[in-house]
Image 1 (tube, rainbow, N blue to C red):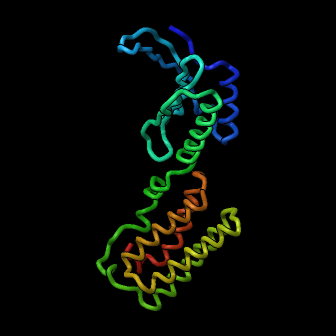
Image 2 (cartoon, helix red, strand yellow):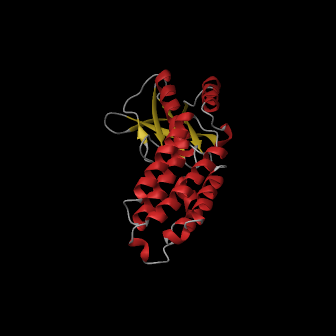
Image 3 (cartoon, one colour):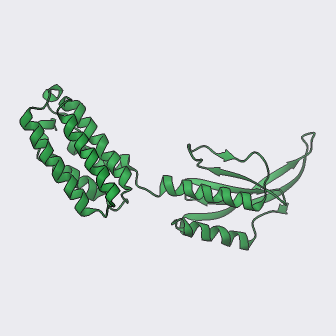
Length: 232
C-alpha cells in the first residue's frame, strides 16, 4: 500500500492555521484512511492511504492525495452537517485554502455557545404559561412598567459587557422595538417576541459561553418585576 499521508512540513502548516483561527490544536487528531485505485473496467489495481484530521467527534478533513494532487473531503460544510467533496484533484495550495475555509466553518459553528441549549436552562423563568389572560393587551400602566424594566435590562447588559458603539446602538433599537410592540401586541405574542429578541441580541453580541449565564440572569432579573403581567 502506498503511503500518501502528509509530510511533517505540511502538517505544521496546518497546525499554525488552527492556532491563527483561535482554535485549540488539542481538539484535533490525525488519522489515516485507506483508498483503492480502480481501472477503467472497475477492477481494483492498487491501494494507498492518506491523512485525515478529525475535529473532536464533530467533523473531519480528508487529504485524499493521488500522489501529486489533492481531492479534499470535509464535514461540516458551510450550510449543513453533510460531507462536502471537491469534484476534482487540485494542487496543495488549493487544498490548503479549502482547509482554511473549513476551519472558519468550525470556528463559526462550534466556537460559540449554543444559545438554544443555554436558553433551555432559563426559559422556565420567562416562558411558562400559568394564566389564561395572556391573550389580553397590556394597559397603559403596564406598558410604562415594561418600558422601565426593559431600560433596566438594557443598562445592565451595557454595564456587564464590553460593547462597541454599534452594539450599543443595536441594543437600543431592539429595546425600543419591544417597547413599541408592547403597545400593539397581546401579552402572549409580545412575550414570545421578547424571548426571540433577547436571543437575537445575544447572537449579535457574540457573547462567549462563559458569559451566557450572566446574560440570561440579567434578563431573568429584569422580567421578575413584570412576571404578573406576562403570565409566568
